[in-house]
Length: 191
Image (cartoon, rainbow, N blue to C red):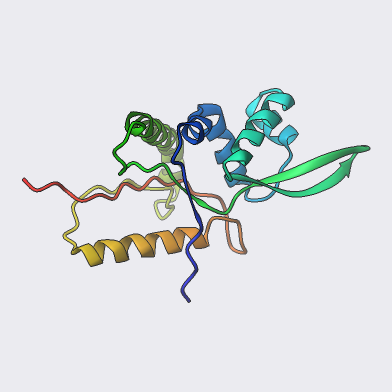
């Protein structure tokens, strides 16, 4: 069954990139995606050890560019709480665009990759003992290499990966834990 690709939010302006690139906002989005369900800004504040007003401010900024959505309101201890969720979209920062924002895009990409790499290293270190006890346990891997693809094969590979990942962006039956990924997929320049 072919899944419909998620809508793509293209960050094309300096304002959009500035909203997105703040490390705290990246942490907020990541937290919301890990939860896989709607949460309150208070829940995010408690989890990230920031003030509720700060969490609310940053969530509203992310909402401005379509990365966070309203889900519902609920009364909690007599207070009307807004539940928000990460939008079911793919974000494109336009790393293949050559314009006056190229350096900002490259900085965002480098920061995101560095953060994922650091979390990967920390997770693998923590999982080594578990893997000694149960060698069949799969906790992640890093694959690097070269694939020889036609332009059409490259598009198909990208489509398959996107379709699979898009279909698993939210928790569903049989999901044990969320998995983080960072995929770099690019054409090798001619020698």
